[in-house]
Length: 178
Length: 409
Image (cartoon, chains in turn yellow, brown):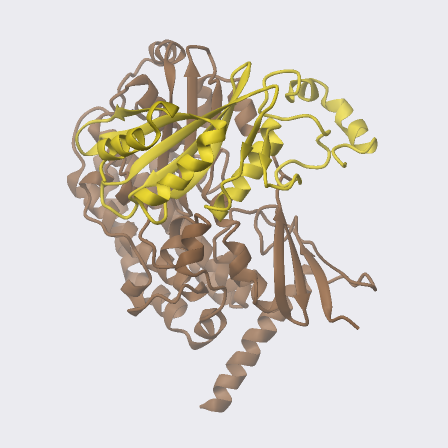
């Protein structure tokens, strides 16, 4: 399926629940058509499930995340049609989570390889992903609990970065151990 | 009495060349479960980047990895160029590709030495690392430095490949063609290498797909994934190349450690040919879209948008996600290096192995890790199993196999 057909298939399946479009960059043989979609957190699992209707093994690359103020944006980067020369289609599915309750469902039941990325988002952004155990994989235990390095608000790591001399004290007090 | 033990390897360990903690459950010599933990050297590079301007980030990106210091700034540049709508001059695309393939040769040959060392063949390690010197010489000739190259600029490259360099590059390519058959013979035909790597550390095609493995690790399981083919960038759309899988060397895919060696050996040969093609096709013209850094910086600081850049690093798919909001620094910069995606696949690879196989299987994904010396076996008596002891186990297994093969003959 080409990017236009994929977009049409999504529109047909999810209608107004999904904002979807194609952004182009490059020219000629370097022309890259990337699909960008935005869905509600509660619909993301269904969208990920639908990827398997489009192809047997959609490739999940990683999730990136942004603190945009009131929301936390999770960008789930996939690639479809891999193995076709010049034919792969990057697809980013954006999920916006309200900061008052930043929760979403895991997709590890569909794509077990997403586990490491979901753990990273929990540790770095302080979101909750239902079905993924809370444990430290990316941050050292010297990082105090309740501090999430990718947050840009009071839960971010700026205060620690400005007061690195106190980091040892936090560790002695128990640091991130729960 | 239970025969079950827990072994913790890392976070600092020479077989894992960058800090990572691998926790093993073993019964006798057999590994029954594996889990891992990262973060011991979290350097906050992305955090630092989000407080710097895009041109400064290029130099930070270059320092993410000691080997992949072409592909990180390349991925960042591709993302930034996509947001800013900058057209890179054609010649710069080819120079980027030449340097990326030199980096791949460097990385794969370096890795071959590490793999040989893990098996106890230090003479092979010394041979491969001597061979690697040639590519480092060429990198130094082109960039003035062996490791951090400072080559990239948004919209092109900072240094041209001059005509006087062509002969030296071709001479180096010929050198690698000449020693390729020896490398192939040592790594793919030697009986004891085969005995230590065949049917060891299997990553089935299904697991490779489900666990989202990348690079030579996924290709060795017979999956044709290569960003240079799938989403080509730089000069790759204009080069004649194929996605390397182990059957091209052996006629079959067995998804084991040997197959991962085979893919990398073949990719060294492929990189030689790609550089040769680039030299033949190298167009004339400028190498920078905007030579004035002040003008460029003003432009970059005014752009808004987001982009994801994909790049095939020596270890596999590398991703940089970038979001610009018309500020001095990016709002978000996320780097996903290939080893990140190849860690979960380590679990099925290592489960079922013997302890002596841990070093070579862990090394077979070419994890991007640094050297030091620590391994602890925690049992009731708090016995310490040092790195030397672990490596000795690996070497002893090789010797047992070699002796056994001798008797059979």
